[in-house]
Amino acid sequence: VQLQASGGGLVQPGGSLRLSCAASGFSLDHYAIGWLRQAPGKEREGVTCISARDGSTYYLDSVKGRFTISRDNAKNTVILQMNSLKPEDTAVYYCAAGGFCGGYQFRGQGTQVTVSS
Image 1 (spheres, one colour):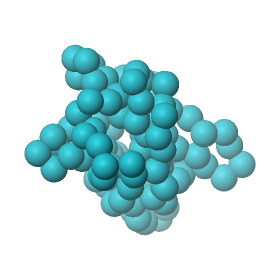
Image 2 (tube, helix red, strand yellow):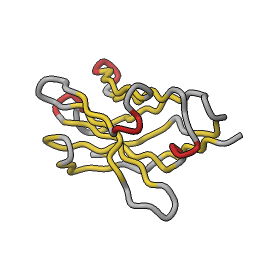
Image 3 (cartoon, rainbow, N blue to C red):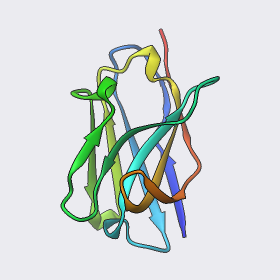
């Protein structure tokens, strides 16, 4: 069972990035999938999650309207589309899987997102 986040990079404020969470060894559509992030010197925080049961989505207030989480079941991936990025979005982003949002059992290695001019 393995999760791998990818798609991070350096982007200017106002730019966009598309992160992918790929799974091997299990089907993501059976799990709630969340994206978490951790900035230097700060605690890890949940950014967004998509439920397994009905596809409900949840967002951290500071990313509402800018970030979108979605599933691509054919590719066994979950996508995080991040628009209008701000310097405060700079962090290592991780994807995680579990039975419900917030109850994660698996977490993959992260991908660095840096928003800077």
